[in-house]
Picture 1: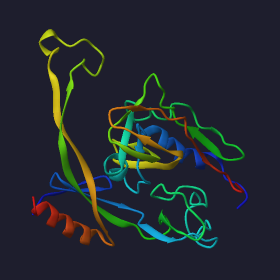
Picture 2: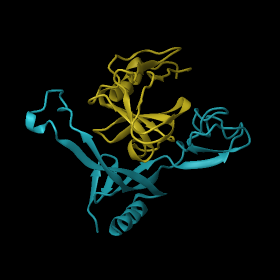
Picture 3: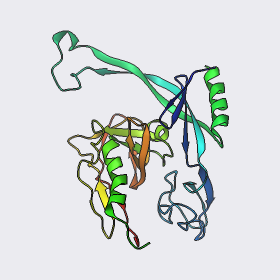
Picture 4: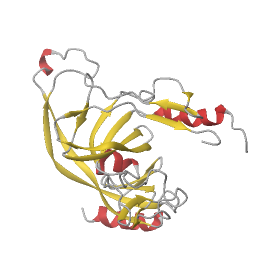
Length: 136
Length: 132
């Protein structure tokens, strides 16, 4: 079992899996009723972007974050997407680097935390997160 | 209820002002900090520490309430585009708290290319008083 740590609202499982609570992503047909501010958040309106950035059109399906519903627990898994290398141009404070550091390049990994699913309870999310962490 | 003191609104805005430090461009509306800063992130601007995104004081909003306005991301100090895609939303986060503070759709979607830079106009956040 990978170690579980909590950082504020975030749960980390090992170094590659994160869990965070947030509003669920849902879909429904765009109508006067479904776009009422008491049903979906005020910024979802005809002609405005939905949660996926697509314009909301009357009578067509749109995606939204359900801020009025129960939060769900999103599970994310880290995926490395390669290495990067950048010239070292100076220290973060802007001072000139010593001569022996001037030609040193910065090397590192870049990665992204991909959405692997959402769960109704924290326990379910942790169980799934442990499975993901165990596969690595 | 017919009255709401400005202090009530200000304390929410002051908490935001004190903590926010980074702006992200996103390919869709983020629901969490990780989505804003990694999963859907296309670019970011780090203003350099807590309290740097909203340097100006809380002021009266129009037509009511109180508001704060974020620093613009300007050409002289642009943000970095870190992935190629279509930016549809912007997010403001507090990285020390790992907290998504604000997510907002852009006025218009913008195609961005990794390695380039971006700018963003100042964004006002207003908490309306009773009656709007």
